[in-house]
Length: 497
Image 1 (spheres, rainbow, N blue to C red):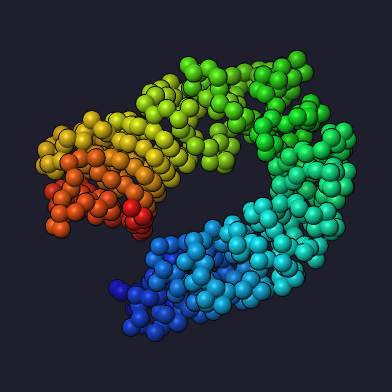
Image 2: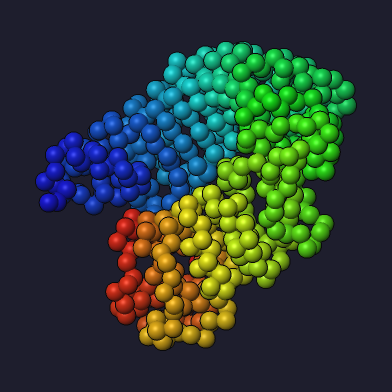
């Protein structure tokens, strides 16, 4: 049965499983079926939540923007990623204006230009509950009319922007520079507290505000329902002592970035027998000075077991916090060769510590083929795998005959990875083969500047092209074996050279 034979209810259920770029691609491909096109274009259920993200398929993005603006009044949740210049021009050529999205309940903007053009939110003040602006320079005159707001993230740049107490606010994420014009008393006295449950404060101290610690402690004490605290100092180590007056028993989750040295915290925790929250992470941006200490290990603070990754100087009671922050697993001091021994040693020696990792990102590395396969098959929960700036299986670069490669590869268990993103990767032909054979569950593959290390794959035009050579290898694999099965593949994105 084809899509055109299904009833509207069934089609809507199918369409809601697609992201909007896939949906628009489907819309464009069914130009002979007005019923399906009208359903995609006019069904409000398909346009309640939209994620606007860039693509190199500008023709597709044009249709996406057209449908986006046609359905602006029905959209409740809108997320806008950083767009390239072409995508942004296409968006505005389709008469994009945030004022047309007057039923928004959630607005998240990562694009700097769009964020800077936002001067007022009065157009959605009656409905907006979640606002996230990640740009440092915001031109909003005021957000004090947003009385329904329960979650707010922005850069605090003006005292006047928070005249409203925001009694409904549950989650607050602020980036603040305490300078001579913005002292701690003025800022903390304006922050919401009545129902606040989660506070993220990324801050910098540029004045000699001797009351800062006292104002900070009083504010935390007044937030009776606060259970999540995330503090991050933006340049170097925090110059004031904040960690000694916190009521740790009050919190379910604490995250400290550059708040104090690990030894200082341990020396405070041990004699006072502080019971750290179930989810605790302390991270310092400075690299470890001990070149032999780059490994995962157990630590005990006041009898509490923690996980320590000392090459990035951190301790945590929950590795989920590492995943939340998308901490990159890379080699210490950007050295490439020792990374494989580090990560493999961790897999073999402390599998119970890393087995809960769900998202794995590796950058600046060299790996053997067996090392890559071990990583791809040893993390049972990892579904998203990102590798950047690396070389894989340089020893295998002399092998290019497909029949010989297939005969020489060992049988390896299937990987659970569903999404792979590769940026600036050099790999052997046999690496591509093995990767294809162990990823039957793969849903999405994105390649940016991925090149074959072997004696160049010669195209019919006698030219080498990283995108074409990779695809030629895929085609060659499919012609030589029926074990290559990407039956669940939904997205293949080929980026820049």
